Image 1 (cartoon, helix red, strand yellow):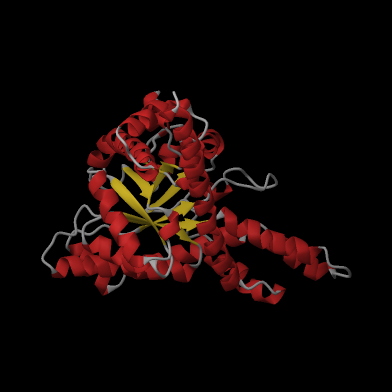
Image 2 (cartoon, helix red, strand yellow):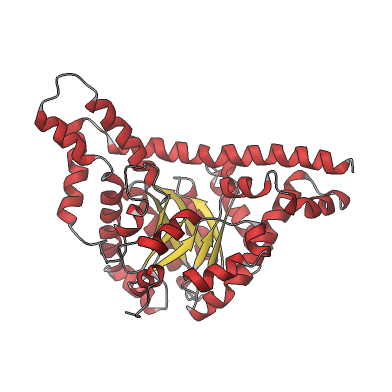
Length: 381
């Protein structure tokens, strides 16, 4: 391990890449993103509709570009795409040295296809192709939701050599299906005599939203009258534990998959493993450590994407150790205990996926409305 006080670099030494879960034009134009690569050891960046809504709405930084779009007669969607494509392209350029130094393992910038098409396989494929063509840099990663309709799109675009960030994964089974979609895409590409080198994918496995949902159910159960001490202790013991336990079991499945002959054949041809990426890692409950979703899940060949506040918290006080494989019996015990307290984890995961799509659709639609208002305002100037 490198002798460094930078805890993020210590995490990197243990095989995990830290990416930033935020992207704005201000961050690019100020040079702060480049500085964070140097000072914090960032190895990539992700974006989503909610991030772009916060970045664009009420920010005059984008006004000149919007005015240029108005003058050239662009539609509202074309103006929106010109804004995000410029930001993603410029971020890709900032991270290109990281991409080259890591030999195409890191240095990626993720951009999501419109969340309104999450339930359409063909539309997702078309948009992924179009986004990749518009952002003509090797380190762009197209984000596709891990819905039943999204996974065939993942398989297809991987076979076409497009790197993919599969997002909104909650259940272990959804992750397993995602991993095999990636493998099938690579196998198809290899069967066509094409190279599988320099194609990357991550499976974005969400964390904090799981604990928010489960903890609320546990609190409701704890509020019931006449709980005996043992039942109360059992319920309390599960709070804040399910997301990390679930992620550990997903990593266990990852290890099984990369041990298969099918994967080994692809690896021999130069394919990269699809790394698990820990997402939704900002701790929402102030009673928990602000770096609990970092400290608990450091492991080889993984990515953790952190919002700015969690980046700084981790830099300051992460307790770095390789814990992803620790206490697997305990992780399984947490998940196995849920039915005994009448919590249906499968149902929770289905609800979280639907809610996750809506959480991206709402800011996307809000952004488009706000952008229309700004277009109307600037068109009068």
